[in-house]
Amino acid sequence: MNRRILFLLMSALLLAANGCSMSQKAKEANKDRVKIGIMLSDAGLGDQSFSDAGFAGLEKAREELNIAFDYRELEESKSYENGLEALVKERNDLVIGLGFSMQEAIEKTAKKYPEQQFLLIDSTSKLPNVHSITFKEEEGSYLIGAIAGMNTKSNIVGFIGGVDVQLIRKFEKGFIEGVKGVNPKAKVVSRFAGSFGDDKLGAELARKMIKEGADHIYPAAGFTGVGVLLESQRAGIYSFGVDSDQFYLAEKAVVTSMMKQVDVAIYNAVKEVVNKKELTQKNSQLGIKEDGVGLAPIRVISLTPEQEDKLNDLKEKLSDGSITVLPN
Image (cartoon, rainbow, N blue to C red; front, side, top):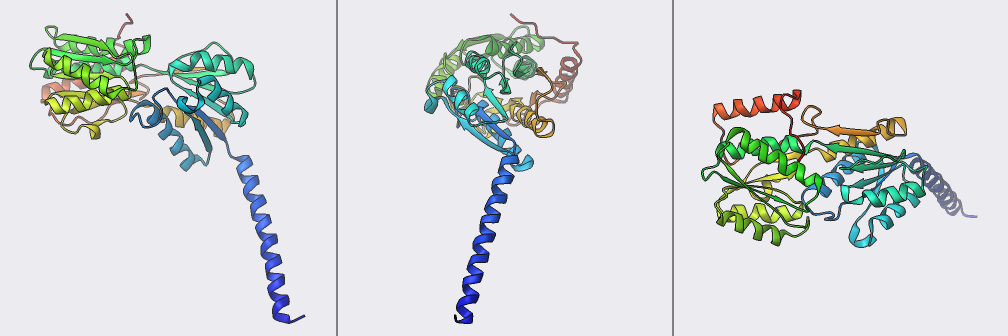
């Protein structure tokens, strides 16, 4: 056989063998990676708020912790239970339910798969294999209310909630108490959209509030809230973002945003699973003291030195418990 042909044949065989070896190594490496599954909230990806924040936490974990993750949305899964079960069957080390609305589904699935580890965001469960992370949204919302109360010219401010449930009432309660704490004369107009995914409805509710004299509006309504921010900008009044920094959605209107660090909380939970193979705390509640909630940079307006001092004082009092926002 020609030496050149023999050399080429041997080289090809070596490359093929090496390729098989590399492929096997890659498979082994992937087997060792921690796998995370997440069922997103009903608004899904692109809500520019809660779901996107949770997804961002997993993206960061993939980059920094070398995990693998998969996700499901309600639209494709048809039900939360279907999506959660699909993630369990993929043999994920941790399955996350993003949002209070899937508590019933996650508990049904957890009972069916008692060896599976679950994490529920925004609600708590008594089941032993369901861990939870909740937030003190009322504390961050109190600070938003204080800013609105100190700066309103009409003495009328507004709150727009998504669905009328206990969780969103926490945002409303904190906002109202923050407004009244610095400006007892101010009136707070409050409405609920009944949806987290309708930006047009959000804009409509904002228009009605603005006609009533509201010059600052705080939406806690997911994608519905995006409509509120855009309508506030169109009308020339001020608004506030929620869950993530939403300034870039309406740069002439969004004063600041109530930052709910869902991305950080999920990243930290995944990191614990990577390091310890399981979550060690059954239920975690994160407020200002734990850096679970807070404010994005203040833009559009400038606080006076006195207002800045007042805001910092309120942060300290919320953190040390001197101020508590009581439930309705």
